[in-house]
Length: 309
Image 1: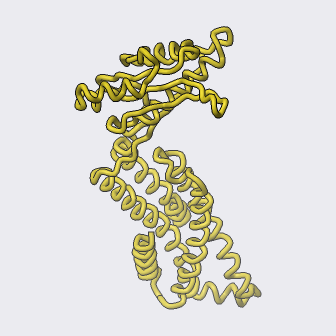
Image 2 (image 1 turned 60 degrees about the horizontal axis):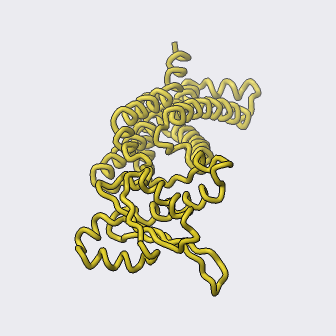
Image 3 (image 1 turned 30 degrees about the horizontal axis):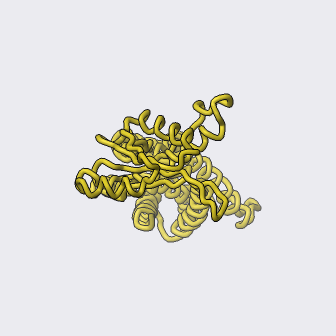
């Protein structure tokens, strides 16, 4: 019966980790993952107009730009004389409110004779959100389609730009705080049950003189404690790795999968096992009741573990 109780105790960290992850995945994860990557295009604006200008020799490039802008639902304002700067100033003087709210971006294609280079200028309005990346992306796609050409399937290729908003609302901060509290409560609670169990056998064998009998039969003190330590650490690491497997398998927030989190978590488990086992052995010399010893060591482990995490 004692063996079954011990095995059940060894499985407690996994069960507590499972409970913790289920609570987080059913409530907190849904809120934290609601802010998904947002593709940025001109179609995101209720009303979008673009400016377009340049030298006549770049007419085919400007046609591609205009076609792509219209494909995203934007109205194209093309400078009759190719001077896009003059067109921008003219529209701004007509109605500055309309200009600021509807004219999102633009482009100008020309040649710089002094530098002997072709230039493509992406122009954007600073008022609408995300106008800079969408302006640059539209020009980049225009050049890509022009350079590939229709024979190479230029229309089949494209560059996309997305943004992943970082929500900093008080609601999300509260949800993150709840997740941290759950991890700081359930994980130390499960591990403490395993660590605390290591005080029972040494304490019981000392009180009943079973340890003394083993030493009298020729077992050295070092052998006695080393065998206990190896067995207890093996049980703890198996129990801890099972718990870690549950945490990783249900880690929807990538808390334990990001960067070097797995290695750090395993190291913390190992150090906690070493320190907790040694502490259990220490208290086995001070107490005379396994019940009192279990209660005391469990309380110390749980309180200290929760506080430090």
